[in-house]
Every structure is written in C-alpha cells, then in structure tokens.
Length: 66
Image 1 (cartoon, rainbow, N blue to C red):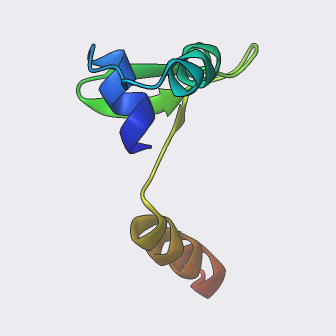
Image 2: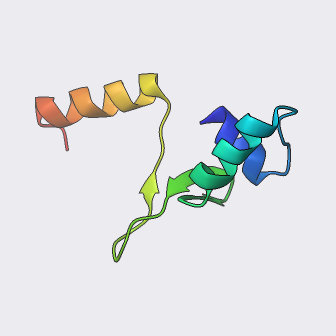
C-alpha cells in the first residue's frame, strides 16, 4: 500500500522499472480523504486496509459481530 500511496501523492521512486510498475498499478487505485480505495468496475470503491486491521475485521465478521 505504501508505494502506491506515495505514487498517488507525487512521490516517485528513483528506479525506472519500479516507476513503470507503479504507473500501471496505480490506475486501479484512488485516494479519497487520505484513504486508499481500489476502483471496481460498476460497483463501489473497495477500501484498502493494512493486514492487522483486515485480520481484526475478518475475525469480527466470522464471530458474527457484523
């Protein structure tokens, strides 16, 4: 998530190969209110979460709290 966020904020890597990879990947993402979202075709934007937060949410869903 970090490199994509940095790219969208205008901070580019020095390596040209890495820059090209980020250019391709970043087309699928968008920053909204400083949160990273993945664009989806014909549906809502999907919020990207760091792994610890994602694990907590998945555990809550499986326990029936949601």
